[in-house]
Length: 300
Image (cartoon, rainbow, N blue to C red):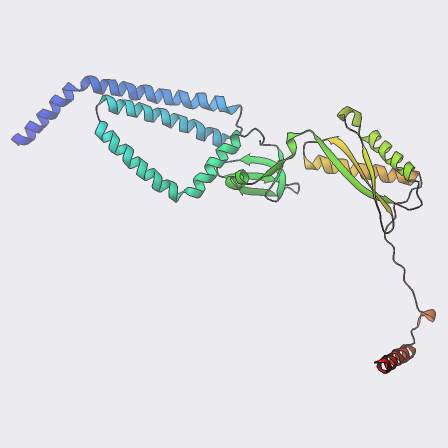
């Protein structure tokens, strides 16, 4: 009992001696706590203008808040002169971090990729993109996955890592898209009239002067049943759906213009030959085959 009492007396003396340090450490921890809350709010508001994903904003703000708490804890332990204990904790945390990192390598890779994608200026929610064989509107960039809504309203969920490691096409980065239309006209058509009529129809329905572009028209080949041409023009569009609508309207207008001027768009034709009297004499065919066979054997 005497030894226990002596030990308690020693601890009491140490505690009384370190009361100022303990008070300072508690003040540091309180300041760190309120500073972390303030840091959380400030970071959330600061990056909120650039990142629309709530999950990513929360992650970044929480990381900043945790760093503030850790700095305060480090200062408090330094004041209390727990340097050896602090070194032990840091060493253990380092080893544990390596083990956890190896175990969650795929998850952490997707999480980090999600944060990186959220800060990229050339990729945002609402953009129309094409990547990894899928095309559609970006609905969400989460911490682990990337969501695309295709034109048929199907949702495609892709890991963030595949988006970051593979190239993608962003249709929303430009407000102009070029449309190409291939068609053919009959051989008897006036080719100069076809070119003039096509370019005027496009200019009339798609104002190229406002866009600052010109309509391009080229005859490309002599086809089996038509002379084919290529017409290219520009439209104001930010996604593939608007491009499809503009191309559909252009095809309808060109077809209507050709019909009004009597210009035909030919299609492949097949000629069928019928046997006279609609009856095939099989015996005559067999006799011809036998005679050709005998002639071949004699020559051989």
